[in-house]
Image (cartoon, rainbow, N blue to C red; front, side):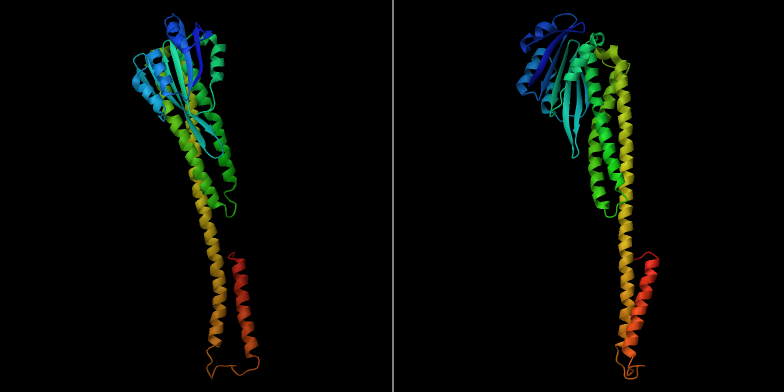
Length: 321
């Protein structure tokens, strides 16, 4: 679906144009066209391919989707893939932004994502002195917006981790905590798969041998790279903390199991002494002492109860009960 199609000249918005008018504006010096598509159909991609002379392999990747973040150069044009993450409490929804960049055009194809980039277009139109740099600055603005959207996700994941950590020493919560930690670990891996390859892309764009179309704004891509380094460091910290939290929860589970084993062993010991005494006096030999004594049975009960009480107090003091 076509979101918008706009022509710019010397950093100024000229007009909203139709697809059929794109070729006319591409021929004007100092002019470039910015087209935005959402969940593009094969027919729309074929139209864009004809208008902008896009490489067929890049168009094929954009139509199939599910690409890893990457930068590919086809002559004087670029094809950049970025992952779009929309996080909630349950999962991370993974979208994709494909950007085709040439000296006189920018084509964005957004897939499986509800959040648009209208604020990026507004920013570019406000910063006319930078928009004069052409399509390269638009690519930077789009990448900067994508990376900035990763920061709230990091904050949300850190908050979830803190909530789980507060429950670590809650009795009986080890299993639930481990399930939540593994769910959080999956979210972190999705974010890591979006960030790590994009660092490589930003590094290429900011390097001295980067694409010519971005040569005037390499310093801006270096800023994006710095942001990605910060995010990647936060991801590593969260992963390490999750690993530590899982080990602590496993240890807490073992401690709880040991406490249960101690209780069972203590009660088994108490009943064992009672069973042993009852077994001895229940053998019914004729010559057993006090067998015919009037108070023999009450005395046996008192001895058994006293022994059990002694063991109970002893186990209670050492914390087994």
